[in-house]
Image 1 (cartoon, rainbow, N blue to C red):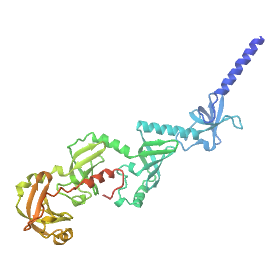
Image 2: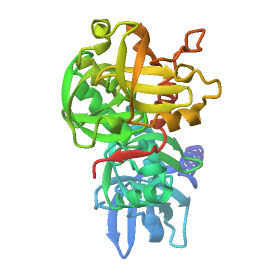
Image 3: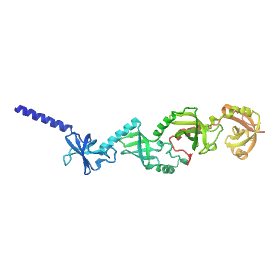
Length: 400
């Protein structure tokens, strides 16, 4: 009998040890069922053996996780103290809530889920966002085109003014990057827009003709809005067959135009206006011949010579050495003697249809060029600008 009592005592002691060793420790996450909500405190039943309490700032009501809880709900909390002055386990929704929300954000990032975020403030680099119970940031480069601050000269004060108009708005975003230790949460509105564009773009293919409206002009090209919220870029070299210095030379904001899709790169759309028009250089030799004397209007003066308009479609180049037999003729004298808009007679000295080049010399001038002038690089600098434009605010004219 005595032996049995000792065994029972031993078993009970082991059970107590197991019970206390299994109790949650500080900083651990526990699950419990809410048994009461009163007097600014929430009590939980932890496994039927311990009562936990959440009170004060640890209630964390600003989190959607805990803002609408009720008796009977099962929730998670973090242990602060194993036993307080009333013999209850002190718990926190705040610590647990942060962990739950960070875990959720990581899953949103992995799964590519679109979520809602509110703009709470702005600085010159972007927007501060409220995302669930966390603070996040959206760089300017991650705004969609409708919210992107296209301002003249990339003026930072104007950019900030534009960004401030978004304060208070709810935006649809995707989680781009998270760092829980540093408490950094980066989101993107552009990612959502790109996904939407990809879906719409399935109905388009290279070679299709679209009708749209000029929505913005930059030094490197024109943006055209068309279809269901789509926007494509017409590079300056794809606007007209002639050389122009700026898209505004051929287009203005609000113009209704037709363009051809020449490339689809993920969500980026590249268009051409000129390819819908017959290349006038294909028939240039039907209109002009080497040795012809023609009248031309000075279109532009360059350091290397004059750009001369023969007609609306064909422009030629008169090199500085082909404008005078005077060895002292320089670009300054050229500008003085041949002002833009002046009309002169020229002799055609070369025609290269495939290169879109026509060489001229002033009538009566012997000419001093002994070798062919190298082709001027027209679009290399502009092409670089196009590459950079996706990640920075460029000088741009937009529709008000």
